[in-house]
Image 1 (tube, rainbow, N blue to C red):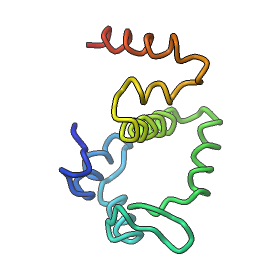
Image 2: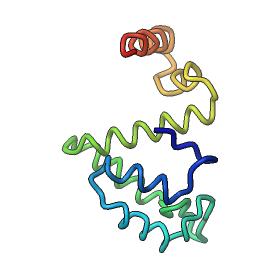
Image 3: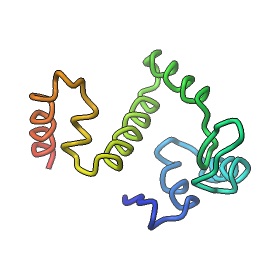
Image 4: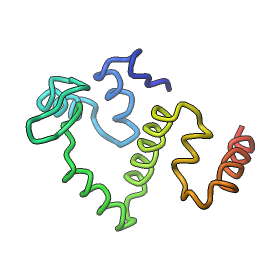
Length: 121
């Protein structure tokens, strides 16, 4: 599934991702429409950003929920979102991987990730 920002509308992205979370796509689309009129670059006066107008409070709540370890979907979704951000920022999987791990582990970590990627193909 290609969800490139330049190729798909926000509504289409929501429609494609919602089933992975067990959500009726109409609900997140309606929330996003209410929050930002589906505007990806929206920013509120209080610092909330994006389609869903996420705030630092919302992000803190996600992190606290991840600590409970009772919903791996939140952990996986947040981890994948962070990898996506790193790849956009650093352009290559190797550089993004280097930024994902502890700097002192980079020597072995990148090679291990590459090996696992090859094994999964």
